[in-house]
Amino acid sequence: YNEMQGGADLMSTTYEKSFQALYENTPDHFSSGGVPNAILDLTYDKLMDYYHEYYAPSKAKVLFYGNLDYTAFLAMLDENFFAGEPKMDANPESADQQSYSKVKFVEYAHPVSADTDVTGKQAFIDYQLGTPSDISDEEYMGLQILVNQVFPNQAFPLYQSLMDTGIASDYWFQFSTD
Image (tube, rainbow, N blue to C red; front, side):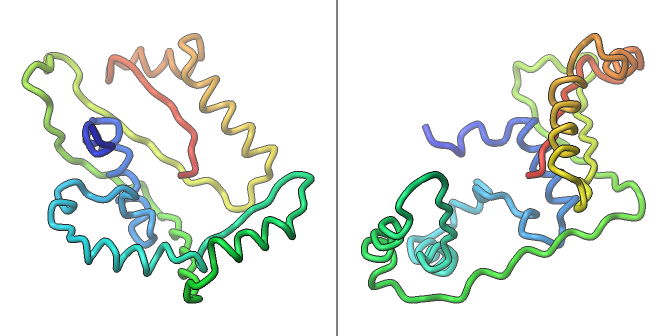
């Protein structure tokens, strides 16, 4: 077993395709785990070159939290993590994806296994909205609760209205800023 097995299920593929379409001008456009077929062409030298370019210790961001002696932790990191490693330029900060002026539609086919029942509704509709950059922490938390807890509730009027359309046999809601 490895993490790439089962990585092409409908939910994860739709999620990845949505990110590719919505964040086409940012690093989020790319799959963080890599494309399984491309991994077959990956050589040890290419892997090590990529690692040294993007995963150098000097590019790490370290966060300390709590009541602790952070100077001791910094000394330990300096001695055991950063010592002997070359200092490299930081990775460039990701640019924000510009908002779209109109709705963007993406359609693609996804294979199903031979034992899948293909009668009835076989669609996955992914509707994504950007999170405003000026949203407060309280508003952000409210959106998380609304979308992740209230929307999927089968008693919620929006859920019932969607079910009544007959477009799909079920609906799934998620709020995420990934």
